[in-house]
Every structure is written in structure tokens, then in C-alpha cells.
Image (cartoon, rainbow, N blue to C red; front, side, top):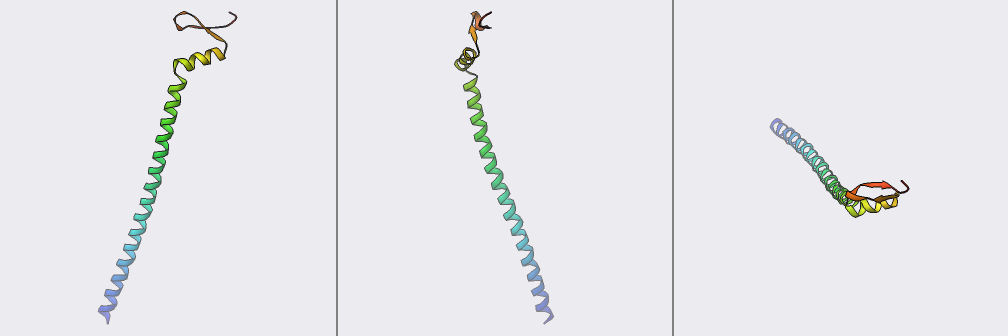
Length: 84
């Protein structure tokens, strides 16, 4: 009877260890999935900001901004305020 108790205790101990290991593995997989989702969202945001940067820094956008702020073009892409 003692042998059955020992093997039963060992079995329960191994079952508990396996359950804990499974829980840790599941938690780490969920954390990795969240990190991958965050990384994908950040990559999309970087792409969006990069495109917006290139659009706002283009020559036509700069020219439109200058006109809206009262600058007039002069030679060699130098700008001066109107009224000077």
C-alpha cells in the first residue's frame, strides 16, 4: 500500500508541475501574441507617418504652405514675405 501511495504522490506532483508549466507556456504565448500585434500596429503607424512626412515635405506642399503664409517665390528658391 505504501508503494501505491508513493507512486500516487509522485504522479500528483508531476501532474501539478506539468499544469504549472502549461500555464506558464500559455501566458508567455499570450504575451508574445500581444507584442506581435503591437509591433504590427506600430509598423503601420510608422508607414503612415513616413508617407505623411514625404507628402508634407514635397515641393508642391512646401510651395502651397508658403503661399498660404504670405511668402512669394523669388529666384533660386529663396522666399520673402509679401510687402517687403
